[in-house]
Length: 412
Image 1: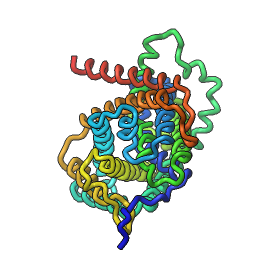
Image 2: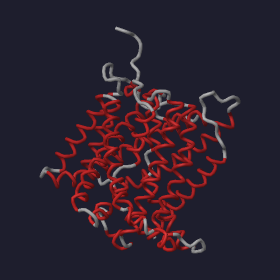
Image 3: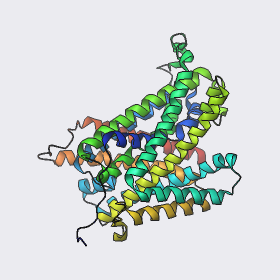
Image 4: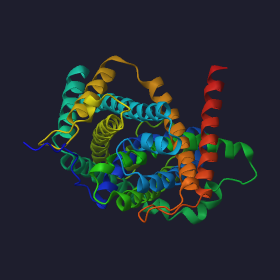
């Protein structure tokens, strides 16, 4: 037998990585989030999605630049360690990223139960156990296979959004006459504060692009592929989100939108009842996809951290035949299952969302430190304009401040 260590298999190209990234971003969130954003932003909800996209784009720039310099699993932990050399902080960042993936997957898995019980009368425990066993087995079986399934689910999700956009074309034709109503007044501070609060919520629909960097050791030519795929995934998802939010506010009143539990299905009910039922099935595929990509991401973070001596070395092994981090994958799957069957995850999910922006803040600062210290960047390193991460830091602080204000207001 060969004494060479078994490594991850590089089998993902730029288009497949882009679809994987879109799958992490365009999940079930957009199918329910439009109405929630409208609570704060009202008819200006599409603008809130654009404001949220700015934070994603600017922080995505920093992720792309750092991934071209350090194409490793456990990306954020590696970036912070390379910039600051603080093992404790780097380990904490890695564990925080893994936590967000695990809690997100457990939350998503719980969301699937209601959809499945509409089709088959099974206990929640049975559904959760069977689903997570299936998804974890798929993640273990092979990265190409699991990413292809994720990509297929992403395509279904995109088709669902395209169906809504096509049926909304007559509404889009009314934009010229409705323009005064859907453009916020520049001088009304109350309206813009509502837009900002809406953007805090809409931002969570963009969370996921950062997961792409944790696939670095399974991507072909990661120094070039990762930056391209990150930018493509953010830009495409932004375009979809804006058009969907615009379709919603053009066809439903603000009160209807806020009250709706499935706003996109309700939009289609205005046009075609059978299509509305199809959207419900597509949203189920999007939810399953979200759980799968989080299992893949969290296991790669744990594997990468173990390689960097930030987690137990036991997780650093790769299965000889499947070429996947099998111990990390099954460990993540087990923790997700335990959380999904035993805990109320609502409060924990809100905390992890806060953590994600803290990680964004650290990655943006890490890029500035790294670039300032570089004497001669490698040929593969993406050129950096420092004003971009600086602006991203300011936006992260604004978003964190807004969330803290909201938490304090709820307590008081």
